[in-house]
Length: 237
Image (cartoon, rainbow, N blue to C red):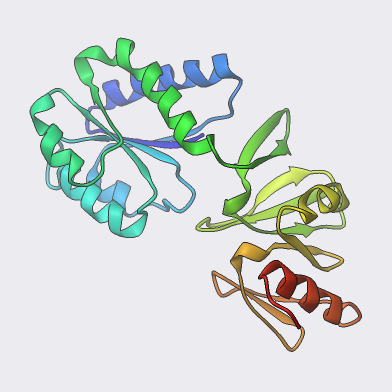
């Protein structure tokens, strides 16, 4: 999981990170967890690939509720867990679609069930693929993948929607082609396997994706590529 903790109490934030690390170790889940101690530094961070935020409500200058309003404009899908000593904040928090509340006085009792719920929300009812990163297999939702890019090395770059950079996965592009063809992925050329869900246009040997990135399609197989895409869209040539 990729998580951010934003809390002006450094000792509490560090302890919360340790508890989350313990949870992920028990579940054999890789964890990327960053700490921020002010609202301003947090809001200036790259949040494109973050899955969940543990956000202190009672912070100076910009409180957690105001931060959450800005987050919702940038990342409507982001899981926000409010961390507070005062449950009285709950009604206001639900107006920004808070996922859960974590009381600071009950962290040991409440944290692990909340992390279970986060896992359920992230991966339940979503088709995922396991990407090999070092010694870990990381589950990634297919709907979040823009395209796979093969490289000369035994490594595949997995480009994600709303992410600053690609994930690096061990293996070859050919390892993914057969299993993903029936799941809406289209081979554009030797190096690209694209998610048709995120293709908005195919024209003149160019494929435009939802993020407006443009990939080259094979000229030799261009007719077949167009045909497969149109069939997937439920259209007839």
